[in-house]
Image (tube, rainbow, N blue to C red; front, side):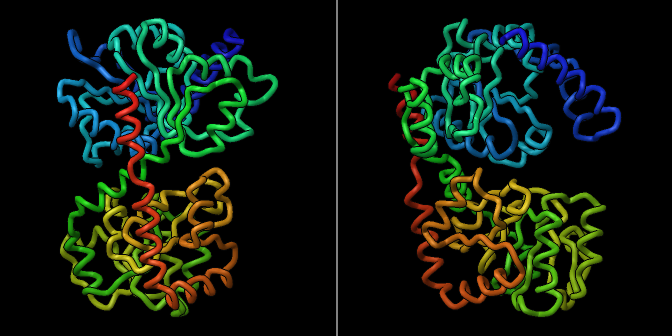
Length: 407
C-alpha cells in the first residue's frame, strides 16, 4: 500500500504542475516550492520544534500553542510549514512567534527524509487532520516526538474503514493525540489508539487572545459613527444571494459590513451590482474618499474581519451552503450570536453553538428573517450566553503544552 501511496503522491505532483499552467492557486503551490531546499536556514545546535498546518485556519489553531511554548522557553526555534498557498501567503497578518515559515515540499520519501534530516526537530506537531505518511515515518525514524493537536476525526475518514490498514499505521506513529471532542477520542480508541486526551479546540484560545489585544479600526469607527453593525463574514455568492435582498428592501435596518471570502475585483464587482442601497469600499475610505450616507461597507481587503466583529450586533458567517463553514468563533468571542447555512456537519463548533442556542442554521430567506427578528428581541440574553460559552472553552492550548512538557 505504501508503494501505491507514493505513486499517488507523484501523480498528484505532476497533476499540480500541469494545472499550474491554467490555475492561479496551483501555480502558487508549484512556484512556492521551487528551490525550497536551497533556502532552508541553518539550524545547527538549535532546539527545533516543527508545526505543520494545512492552511490559515490550522495556523490559528497552532498559534496559541506556539506562543505558549515560546513564552516558556525563548530558545526554541519554531518552524512552520503550510500545504496551501492561502496559509503561506497570509500567515504574516497574524501576530506570531514562528522563526521560519515555508511550504511543505511534496510528500515523497526523498523530500521527507531530506527535510526532516535538515531540521532534526525535537518535537513535531501536525495540526487538525493533516497526515502526510512519508513525513510522519521520517520523523519517527529520527526519534522525534510526534503529536497531533486539535485533532478532529469523523467516522467516514479512511482510518476507520476496513481497507484503511495503511492509514491506521500512519496514526500509530504518533506519540499522542490532543483531540477536540469525544467523537474523535472514541474513534481513535476503536482502532486501538489509547494515547488520547480531549483538550478541545485551541481556536477558542486564539480568538480570546485576539479580543484581549484588540486594536481599534478608525475607518470602521468613522463608517459606523457609534452604531452597531450586522456583519456578514467570509461570504460566498450563495450567502450574498440570500442576504442582499433583505438589505435592499430595508428589512435589515442596521449598517452592514460585508467581508467576502473572495476579495478579487471580479467578486467585489458582483456584490456591488447586487446592492441597490448606497455602499462604499473599505479601500476607498483608506484612500480618503469622503463618506456620505452609505449603508454598507465592503471589506475588499484581507486581515480586517476578525477585529471588525467587535463592532457588530449580530453576524452571519458564510460557507454554510457549500460545506466550508468559516470561523464562527471570531464573532462569538465578542458576544455576537451567529447565523450560518445548513451544511455544517464537518464543523463540530456549529453543532455546539446550535445546542447552546447561540448559533442558528438557516436555509431560506424566510428563516433568515425570523432568526434576525428573534436575535433582536433577545439580544442582551444572547450576548451574555455567547460570551460565557466561549470563555468556558478556553485553556486547550495550556493543557497541550503542559502535557507535552511532561512527556
